[in-house]
Length: 525
Image (tube, rainbow, N blue to C red):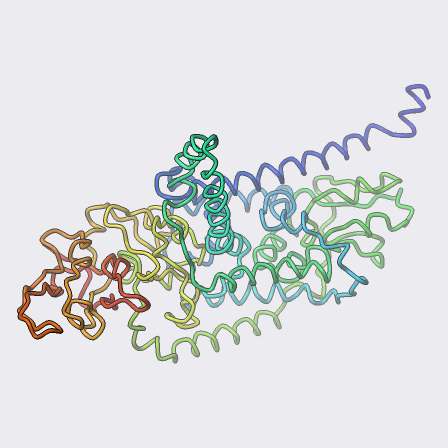
């Protein structure tokens, strides 16, 4: 075949289309790997906090909701405007090229698991617009609970609380097995020194309800059984926001007169945005600019020009009914959350990170899980029941799982919206987050009359918040012995929880940290 014949059989425009499809796949891989690397190196001692929390600051939905709820504009949040600008120019490119959750859904299509194609009504696309409006209206009423549905927070939270702890357990088991081989000991030790504590923790980390966090993510992926990218089509509130912006985007998909209506484009569209009954045109609010349709079109009838005709408003697009429903749902939700008992009196174990309690955490926290990941001891965990529904998956300290490291202020530095304030280390050390109380019925020294000074030894504050009082007691044989019993000096305790974490009593610790009195906030030694 000569060159002219080759050009007719495989024209240059098709090469260009395939090149763009290939470029998109490369960008998807690079963006996902970049997100993963930022996650891995987001622990204390890793990359700078302003870098590792950049993906969250790129999220227009999270930043807009935070702005509405906190009434505070952070200069760092302006990074999200770059995604808005990109969408205005090139359409919903974020969803099709850059979103890490969308990329995972592309890579796990579950096509072979579908026994038959489920016909999901197109009107269901309106659900994501309803969720978007509900999130924004609720944010006006200072409620950010539904940001648990933001795709970036879903993925980061899942990695932090479920995937990475499991990876740590597997790596630890492999290291233990390989270290038993003398020849491999130097290599195993060198590898361990490189990954701990920057990527993996020195000590194993444990999170509560890991199956809940993993199950939530699995449920999102499992929706692909119903349709490819089901989450992006029908449920994603960030996709809804970018979809609305895409409707006025500069570059849009266009079908030319060369279309033979073969349906090839419709069959490959991952979001089902192409509609046969509308001459195979698509809604730019649903199109993720993946260009799969252009690559599949045998007639080269699909173009992506600038300034294509304005799209029609679809039945599932937001209207007055959506707005009224969102307004009603938001008002009802805020009212119900406000009537919860925890709204009137804190749960006794609702211990917040340093400075967060007095910083209106609920009005600012976007539930991203950055603080969970940054905490070197896994003390910060997502709240499940302690803060009620309004505070679900906001950060709470669980001292039995880990303690607030006296030498660490990473949580405040990495928080992308300053829900945990970026305190200096000195200021952080002065913030009271709780008060320790000794259960004398469980304490070894008090209940069993045996020496145990672990809590006193571990206390990191100057002058010690736990002191030992030597007391004469009778032992089991009736002899008089001296026992050192711990006592908490309330005005010195900052509630770091290391005493509770290190307490050797099995099960519930004999010394526990509880929510401080309202007046606690700053302590001067």
